[in-house]
Image 1 (tube, rainbow, N blue to C red):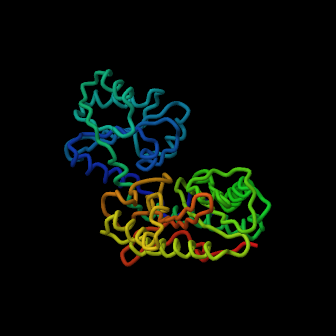
Image 2: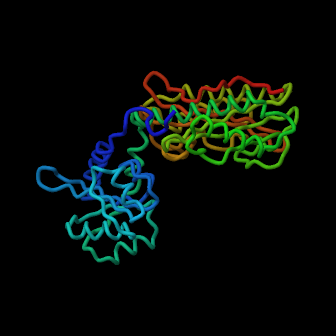
Image 3: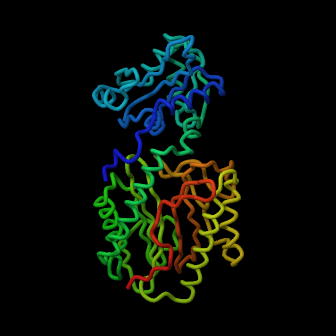
Length: 375
């Protein structure tokens, strides 16, 4: 699998065109993009220093002033990755971009106020470019919520790598009593690299025994033992896009309480998946899953939201939680990951990555969710 060539190539110009519509709606003449993830989404550029000015131009009456800036280290890279935009080479990229915006008298320039620091904003103002700076948070993130065909292909590939990595771990007998959480985590990560991962999505969680009751436990030298729950939460990155999956196993014969809690979380996760439909409130999706656990009397042991968006970042909008806002749209990629955690005893979480579709979600993580016993 070649991560850079999965699916149809992205149409960055179309993405910037969609953004221009939002700029008009928000009454700004241009947007200064300084968040590198948003910049990658709009241009394909993957360097570590860049700024982008997206001009809300009227092609009948004005020249498009959209321009990308980066420093000399990326002169060749920006030419290769963003051949359709003017590139400015300067170490202080945002400063240079704003100088140009001032020369062009663009007027009202939006900036990513949820990203820009107070000090950075002060620097914008002190440049005295004659521009009016307008806070415009979350515009690119709004576009990023709905994935296009290219993005879904990348997500499918990333999830397939996660599935294959876990299958390899199990086939090689590397999840067994006597090994440590850290050993299992490193072996799972290496298996994902073997299957084509560009990187891991986040620090792999391996939590055995009582540690499985800690939602975001970090792997330690704790030794896996017969009778333990073992929770694995992990993901792979392919072409910049992340996968996210959690499976919980039992080492040896499961006890009655382990079967009961596993079946409860499995039923809750199924309810959450089935609630994913375009037009459904995200809070209602959380409620559908949470109600199953609450009916069993364990509501207080489900201590986090049901899920989150996933894409170029492992945690994106929308958040699926009790206090989540907004409704789902077709094409949104999300996780569904309920959990029940008994402190000092153990816990279960089951998580999938899915894409919201008319008629039911598309499941991207295909590893079985049946209770798996590892001897």
